[in-house]
Image (cartoon, rainbow, N blue to C red; front, side):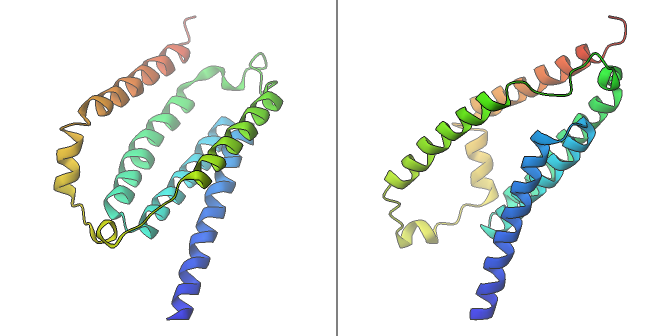
Length: 169
């Protein structure tokens, strides 16, 4: 039993490392298409993390919705954008130093808030099993407004990508 625990723990940390490395590649690569491929790897790592947490439904939704649908849409938008290889489009970010400073401040506050939480775990919360029917009832009940806001934001992003990709400007 100890050896299985060791392999599970090693696999989790390897998945976390690959996911983190892919996320760093998303923001550091210069080729936008390669950034999209690294984002697919990062999202796949999140899906594997969901599997480790025994949230199979969320893992499948992560793969189907984010990797399957949204990333396909994003890759098509990248491929249809004609100005990506134009020399006038800047390929560097001049705001990386302030971004890393803000990220460091955010991480300090985030880690401090996580350390301040008592994280009391009781056996009743560990034994609770939420099925997909209850999850669907929550999404279409009290959480329908945030669910719809997310869909509106995605439609606005799609329209913005189409406007930016037009060639008649």
